[in-house]
Length: 151
Image 1 (spheres, helix red, strand yellow):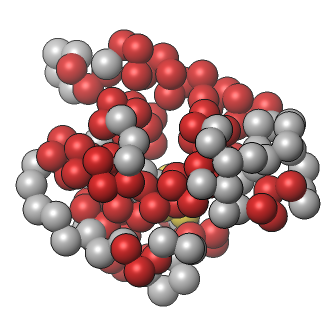
Image 2 (cartoon, rainbow, N blue to C red):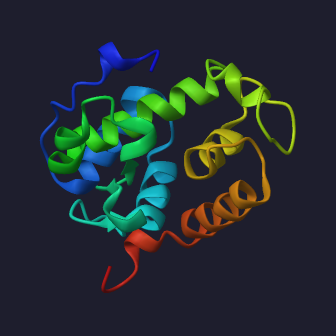
């Protein structure tokens, strides 16, 4: 990951404070990261997905993202959020050029926030699964799910 040296997960605070910290650190709206975290884990660091291969607040997935950081991404909410922010920033900045060498719905380019969000989920740029995920995140962002009673 091009930004690996910046991912330290050292912030401490509530889940919402951690999400805000990661969003601001990586230059994204906190509302976006809040919405993604509701889709991925409903803000539960203990969440497991993909048969145990994905874990944490943003569901960092073992086969694609760990490179030796699985344990800390599983155990640390701040690291999990920081890692997600770093990956999202790399997509957004155009550093994942390999996305133009695999199946995609449109050409990968820098500066496409929603394409970046979808790529986190689908591993591909603007494919149908990515579009579905983007739609869900947008709905959660619009509804501010994290502010609903009982969240």
